[in-house]
Image 1: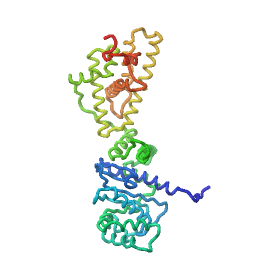
Image 2: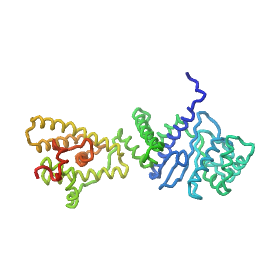
Image 3: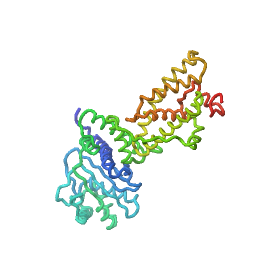
Image 4: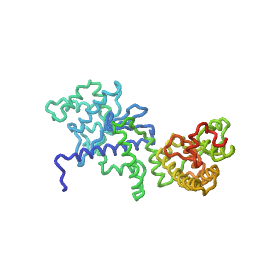
Amino acid sequence: MTQKMPHSAAGQMVGYLYQCEWALVELARRWFKDPEAELRMEMLDDIDILHQDTPVELVQSKHHGHAGELGLTSADLWRSINSWCDALDHLPPGQIPMLRLVTTQTVSPGSLLAKLKQDTRDVDGALAALEAVASDADGAKTTRDWRARFMALSSPTRAALVGAVILDDQAPRVSEVDSTLREVVGIWKHDQQSQEILKELKGWWWAVSLEMLDHATPGRRLSVTAEELRTQIDYVFGKYTQTALPIMDSLDDLTEQEVNRYADRVFVAQLKMVGLGNRSIRAHMGEFHHAWAHRSRWVYRHHVTPGELAQFDTDLRQEWKIIFAKHADRFEAGKAGDDAEVVGENILEETLAAAHGIKLRQVDKRWIARGTLHALADNAHEELNPLGWHPNFQELLGAPDNTTGPGE
């Protein structure tokens, strides 16, 4: 069966797919000059571009499977104008952002509508032409209500609205968007690795789009920034090109105030459980502190994604799980003596050693992994599957007044 069913919504579906894919292109074009730009969908328009929470651009996207011409009487044009009239009701008086119509159709050079293209603008001429069409009592019934809505605006508002309109014709069709995205993002090769990069980036984008469009979900994502997209691009590229992360040149020793701040933390209690002395604990405090500071800085400055850090944590936890299970089983079976502190210290040392082979990007700094393991141990009270060193750490952490460790 190759024919389209009479009630097929294929064209409408392609239009929605195109809107989502084109939104990615729009955001990717802004990451360098305006990393704080935000994008949202299906709020004021198909695509909204905001800066500091203020809409600066509203984008209508119109996809057609075959070549065609956009004219003064086209339904796409008047449907877009009607949508922009709706948007005016939700914007502060006098505040009209740029209004762009991105269409795969063509605006004929020299036509009256061409006066609204970026490089051939004549707003007064375009306004007069649109008002003439809108006032035509014999005009198409399809656009009648939209044209009436336009004429219901005050004369100054109509002039301001038309002055904000930009027509972007001959936009890439949905099958051509990947090529445009490659150019914008900087994927210049056409090999298998480049295909994987593009596929993974678009997979992330579809998940983000769904979060923004699923209005029924409480606390859903409302927008995405150009800087967040840049971070994701760096992450995906980094998986294939091994992009490094910035590391501070020197790691200062902790001050007494910092040491005191960490003294009652769970990860410190866990170290005391296995009999570590003050010097060792202080050294581990330093690695916890510097790993946390770097991770926080990387997330804040969009050098890494939360998902990338979560995967790193998962890899570390897996190493601990194997080592802990081995030693705890031997201890319970009486094959490792009866000194639980010694067993716990062995678990700690083996886990820290195993972590040396797990890197975050190209960062060859062992203290990142070791400090992260202490951060995971610090969350032992909050997690269903906590991480710790002493074979009985869960029971000991749950005991009253046990912040100083067993036997002290």
